[in-house]
Length: 138
Image 1: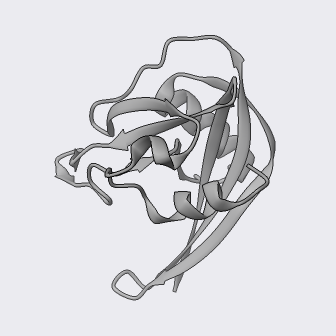
Image 2: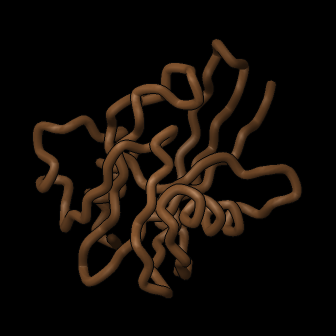
């Protein structure tokens, strides 16, 4: 069995949260959760701490330098087709330097700042975001 660690950040600015829309195709392959709204994040690389991965992914995916405050969510799932356990850590973060948001079209097609998921009613949203926004600590 393989264990994969994933690190994400819910980025807050002036009471709003940055969400990014996953592309349909990622590097010529069908994307996981295509056209769903998500938050910046990805796999923790070898010899990298989850916090470092979250900072790197925020820069790679949305061109933002952030400060991480704390872990706000953790979940794990077993994918029997890949014989892999995926564990996700989600941090709360804040932008430390004002920059334009730049998306990699190979990964994401759009971004939006929201105060709650009600702002995206009728859109596809990755399942774990519902738990995060339902939590009173966000």
